[in-house]
Length: 475
Image (cartoon, rainbow, N blue to C red; front, side, top):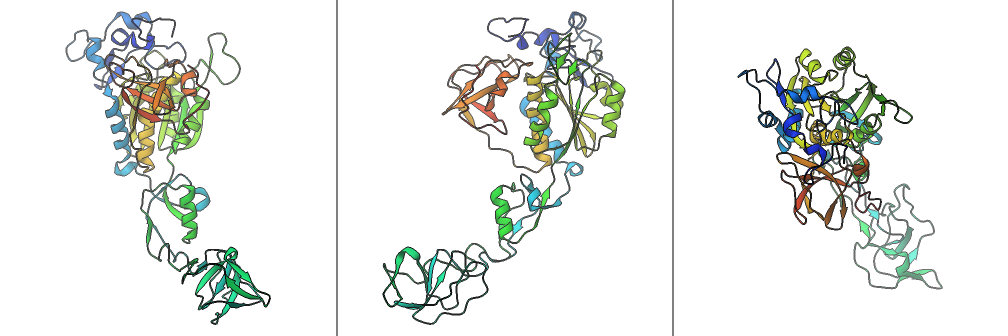
C-alpha cells in the first residue's frame, strides 16, 4: 500500500480517480490526462496523486467554457477490451503489414509462416525399415546374406524368395522384400538359417514411400507458428528456408531525468526498472528490439528520436501525463500523429496511449510506473505486435479466483496471480509502482469494474514465459 493510504479496502491507486485523473481537452480536440509526478517513476501510471496545482482546478471544457466534471472526462478514455481491439486492428491495415521474408530454418523459430508449407517430396521418399532386424522375402526359414543394409547406403540388391538380409532402422528396403522381422523376433539355427519366433504379417515394420505425405501435399497452413517440430517437418519435407512474417522491429525510448542505470536509489533518483525489463518482455512477445535509448526529460531529443526511428513500433516509457516534463503528447501533436487510444479504463496504467506515426509505424506510450507499464504493454503493445507478426490470438480462458478481489468502480483492473490447480490466487504488492507481485506471477487476472468474488471465473492473461506451479509466491 502506498503512503497515501486506503479507504474502505481500496488501494491508493483507486482513490484519486475523480479528483486527479481529469482529462483535458487540448487544441486538437483530443483528450489528455492531467497529472504530474508519480511516487516511483515520473510520467507514470496516472494512479498517483498529482501536484496540488493540478488537483485544485478541474479542466475547463473548450466546447462549453465550463469546468469539466472529472467523471465526465474519465469516460472519454477507451474501455480495456476496445483498446486491445483497436491495437490489433491498427496493425492489420495494408501499409502496416510486414512483407514476408525468406528465412533460413535456423532463424525461423517463433515466426509465422507466410505461405503454406507444401511437401517438396514424398515422406518417406522410399520404402524404409521401421525396425532393426532382417528384411525377408517369402516364407521362412531364410538364408541370410553376409552383408547387411545400413541407413544411408546405396540401393540394395533385390531379395529372392527364402532370402533375408540384416537391416537397420531407416535403411532402404531391398526390392521384393515381404516384411521386416524384428531382431527380437528371430533366431538362427546351427546351419545359420533364420526362423521367426512369432507369426508375421505381409508388410510388417515397413514404412512405405509416401506414408506420411506425397509431394505437393499441404502440411501446414499459412499462419502457423514455427515451432521446433515445424522446423523438423520442414527439413524432412526438403526445405532449407521458409517464407515467414518477420519479427516486428521495436525501439524503446526510456524517458525521465530521475532514472539511474546502476547502483542504489539516492538523492531523489531511482533505478530504471523498465529499461532492463521491457526488451526481453518484448522479445518474448515476438519482437526484435533494435535499440534501447535513454533520453531523460528532453522534448527535442524525444522528437528527434521518434522522427529518426525506422522501427515498426516505438515504445516510450513515462511522460504520458500532462506534467511540465511530460513530453509525449506535445511531441505527438508536433508530429501530427493520429492518436488511436488516449487513455484506457484500466488500473494500473490508465494514461497509456497508442498513436499512428505513419501508415506503417506506431507508437505505444507506456506509463512510467513499472506495473502500470506492464499493463500498457499487455493492453496495447501485445495485440499490436501479435497482429503485426500475423500470430494467432490465444484462446481466452478463465479460472475461478481463490480469494475475492476488490475492483475499481468504473475501470477494469489487472491483478497478478499464480495458478494453483484449477484456481487463480491473487497476489499482493500489486500497486502501480510495484514489481514484486508480477515477478512471482503466472498471469494477470482481468478483474471487471466492481471487483470479483471468491470462486468467480475471471479471464486470465498468461505471461509469455510463465508455467504453472511456481513455488516462490510472494504474497
